[in-house]
Length: 370
Image (cartoon, rainbow, N blue to C red; front, side, top):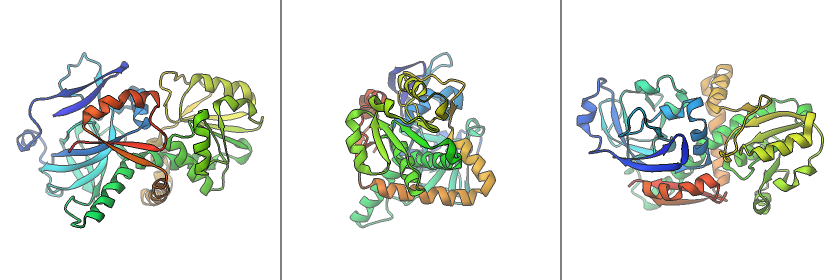
């Protein structure tokens, strides 16, 4: 079994670790629980969102989901979670058949062993002891059609493409929807001006799409080379470059920051002063610079989702969120190019590009483990 690992103290140090053998029935039968199973990971997406998992791995528990293989307790290796698709190859849970396929949270590895599972509303839930205290939204795996469900090649291709869009965009646009709810709840007098930094990121674009649907204007802020392409998507009321921040009007302003760039943050605060009403940090694409001060907030989507579910019920929230995500994904199919790369070695080759923000904003990368 192979697994992509990264040094939790040095993001420039990463490797592929290999363990002897592979998960099989014998390994499952050796667990204490009779409802364990093994999933072979087919493919997964990697985006700037995964770098946020790295930056807040200790604070928000992301390192705890998937323990690194072949490491000792005094080593700093960790596993960044990814969103992907996997197929059950062995199961001790009668409700989950071999060949079942699921979309969900995986390690960038060849296999995932779940020590204990249950099925609720057709969703698979990983109840492994080390995951029980972690945000439950990450432990839910949604069923997908089997690989043999469609004999027609054209239908199978469409299914494959749809799954790629889901693993790339579903977690990002779910966050976009949460943010749009937060923005809509802010009094209009406090958000006369709304800025979205790192405006070309996919979470930012999903947010801009949601706000446009709600008739809320947002100014996208991005690098100079991305201003024109971003204007072409027609979801922001205006798009400016970071060099144009001195053009901002002095009025009640809310900032949604997907980058965490310390220099940009300082420029905005200096320009707006008391006119800056809220500063919401979401992603950390500029992970090298991140510094959070007492007048800022860090947005954590699972906490927001939990709160909203308690307010309106899980079923109603799921209906609203899923409806938005499906609509946003359909919109994205018109501009997002999906590139499939083969093997964990491809992620290793690409990792520095992901870190440095060199992946084009209109491209999504999928890593296959056939």
